[in-house]
Length: 336
Image 1 (cartoon, rainbow, N blue to C red):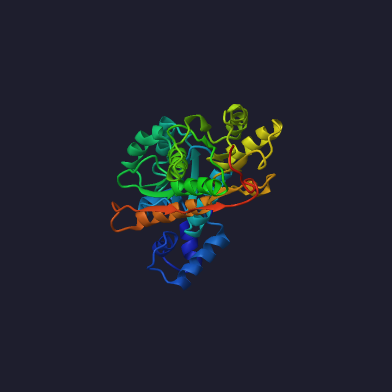
Image 2: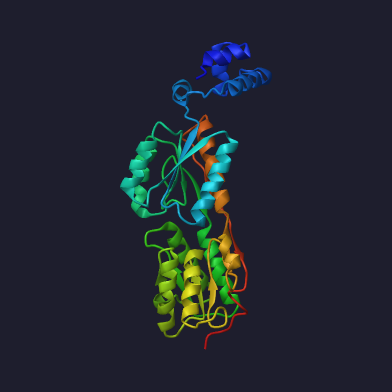
């Protein structure tokens, strides 16, 4: 196996110069750096990342902790993180915490010393203690956190505004009996979308009806289950806002099995605008959020934190949510 000495000899430079090139030092000219990289490629030399990290105090890797790795929402977040990291010539380590505080801390400990910082999706209130503990030893960027944390950069989605726009659209179509399928209890995305739903109703003088607030958990199965619950409601709603598209997919399937047509019998709006939403029958009206950009923004904030002369300074970004109108709402009608 080739050594750093072999690379230096082939490139006609010192070992120190080769080391500076691999560590990204600006002290080496472009022509010399290219000569070193070409020599390393010809010799199939693999730099020792562990040794480099001892010299630079950098691992050239970022860690990602997500509550789940299944589904388009998470895959798009990961895709955004991966592209932004590769553009910065960094690698990514990914782990699932299952929204469990102990598992989150265990995963962060396993990555400690292997990554320069962590991107963490911590929407559940149950993970707040874990975030506090991890942030004491590792630079963090939080995605949709359950609360603000000291010395953590944050990227959030405009959940409240997006939900308000979705329900306002149903109101504009003439609907007044509007139900909601909520997300998991204690999840900040679910809570903010529920508050947006209630605010939209309150603004037109409608008091939110507790029986219309159906419990879901962001899965297709919970949306499918709620279909039967909606059918039994009196008065039956004429529209429903599902707080994510996965539950809307399950709901559409459940309604079809009950002989309830969308949008003629029930208008449906989702949230997230996953790719499948536009190919459903009928195509789903939903709230678009750019989960790919969520991942990219998180990497930019983390790198800014790592390279900042004031690492204690923190910033917060909120990505917009935009209503996308398709066929699942129809023309709307007033409830009798």
